[in-house]
Length: 177
Image 1: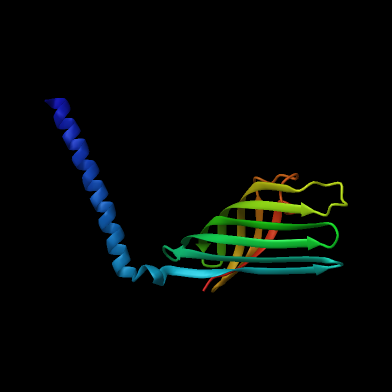
Image 2 (image 1 turned 90 degrees about the horizontal axis):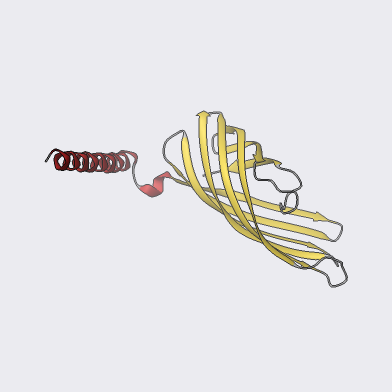
């Protein structure tokens, strides 16, 4: 009897906790407005030209602003590179990003990125075509003002043999509207 009463009390407590959590979420949604009012859009575009070289990137993203300090979102990445008479590569993937503003001007970020790299080499080179997945986990810090943030990030999963970047360190510039 004691054991059954304990299980009933335990289940009731858990049920109350779940209802309380759901009620708080609903209440927060009602006080902050519609879901889409909290979604911010942004991304980046990159172009690079050189001697018979081209690289273009488009990387849209969207974040949900939970409050003035914390946001979480998703991003897509599409990159095309080519070096005349050497190779062409297509890089497609996505990312999960978290942003935290310690104070309004200082923003910390964590971003997990998963990319598929497809490289096709010219038949005259000694390299063979490759297709592989590469993961990156960026931890960053930057200065934020309004909708803009810039800073530096570090890839803690950096692998010299697979990474599409030359260094684990990279600058960032973010814009979210």
